[in-house]
Length: 547
Picture 1 (cartoon, helix red, strand yellow):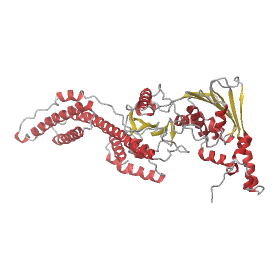
Picture 2 (picture 1 turned 180 degrees about the vertical axis):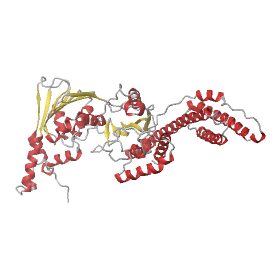
Picture 3 (picture 1 turned 180 degrees about the horizontal axis):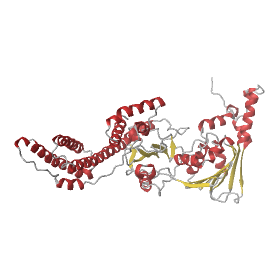
Picture 4 (picture 1 turned 90 degrees about the vertical axis):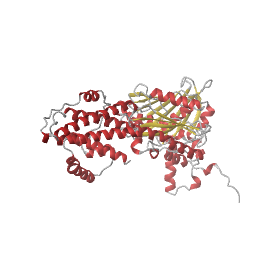
């Protein structure tokens, strides 16, 4: 026995079609691959232009000479550094194999002539289709199938041209004769720009996202501290007559009240190894990010997306995960994406990385829990202030009604206990502790005044003249000094809209059942519309705790 001796005929031409269909199921993935090549070549600015059935991609990278361009046509063989360069697998250049009739690349390197490479994809596809048909009709057998090397030699051309054709240092990629099946997809600016914002290492939007500078500078500095690099690129997109410089998709408008908490950062590292950085911004209210496409964390390797935003959801409480917008940025050269770019290739380091990500998310869990408690505390302080003011204002009105006064004492004690318990747990934000103490003090004063009145009423049998009691004036002043945070509560129209806001999927039958429960149970518990909305918000808090 001995090892087989492989020949060029052992790799059939059809492997190219099989590979590209499997690795690039989304036609837009071709743009991602070509942009990756530009970033790997040191490009700082890339421009994509789409006109009718033609796409051009220009970058200002270092360019290629004819030898390098010739190597780019190899299948599964690349000179790129797997750790540093994202597009290292030697197949990305063929990502548009099924999209267009012809791929042309012009490139100019410093002190070199312009060189070009032309791939006749329609010629390749027609030959392979003809080959399939002949084999189905038993006109040829497997030994007569064209091999991959012969296919490339027949349909790939490399050469040099004059600088007039392409005078600038860098690379231009042209996809000509787009397949009609994909023209509509590449003609929709919104769909295309949203896709590119997610998968390209774009700069942050410094005009519409107030944390943009802080995030860029912080991540850049952390990486520099570990001798790593956080790469960003400017990207211009033009689709027919619509054009725009693209940025990462994060803007203030994605958060409730157009605001989020300050970004949280976590370094992913062990004692002797640096993986990258997690950053995240928490919504300003206890609500999910409304844009489902942006809620949660996106994993990025050298800025390019790995998987989708649900990939890491198991590391954080679901109710908290959906209140964040953030990224897990991996810059470690030893962590490599798999071929489909939906995860990292299996290795011991990958296991350590995910362990660090799990530990890193503990900080985001704690932050969200703290905010949850603080905002609940704000609401309860505001509600307590309003309730005590109302009792204090009505004190004179009910000063001869012992039953109403006793009810007021019960309410006051409930307010006192609620605020006291929060203070003991440390679940009131520091700047509102004084307000909480004022509420406790005011509650005791009002309770004392009411109990005095109740005691007087019980002495009627002794025929003691009852003086009409006045609300303690210092209580009104004390309560008036408590500023409210005015936390915006979402008032849902009904129980069904509450459940839908939590992204709970309900069938039509279940919706009908929920409506009946709402009408016959929930609404019957409320004395008025305001109380009904309060019950709904309490239910929302309880439902969120279940996640």
